[in-house]
Length: 208
Image 1 (spheres, helix red, strand yellow):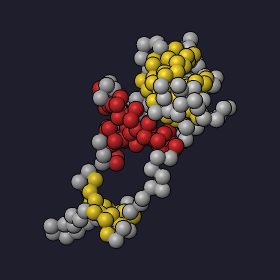
Image 2 (cartoon, rainbow, N blue to C red):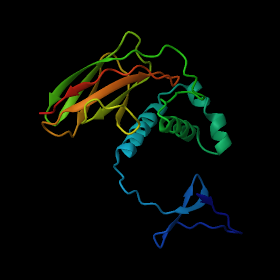
Image 3 (cartoon, rainbow, N blue to C red):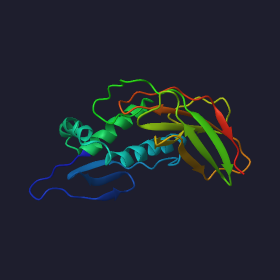
């Protein structure tokens, strides 16, 4: 991305030219970038990134004032909002398959959550996951990994949802599934400090 500066009244273009370059504005700053069309906007990795983005966005408003304030310095350094600093930092952590943190920086302290115990109930084109706490539960959320292949290894590419931990059990309904197809899940918790927990052994369910 290239910032654009113009004389006097300035340059304030918007839109794409010849399907090659795009002019736009972000946070009051004009820029030019190459126009990129995703080859597969619904790839597994892109869906994983969106799942983490959704989780982070939903939690920001309920984050404590002290935690929100901890992002001010990082935001000031990049001339962005504390919210964008929080999202950018945590998405960078997630791109390295590291869990997010409520405060800046992630300290990854505390007791790592034990693996949960999940019970799966089948429904019509859906599976209900009831996630019961382990001996040491997380204080922030659960990561839910899913595959149609047994024995899979959880990765950034097969996260289907990140959810806030609620009173045990935490319930998540996975919808839009294929009837008669077995789905395999592995789940782990994570702390507000960015500390990840132990993965649960694989569980399986088949939608009706």
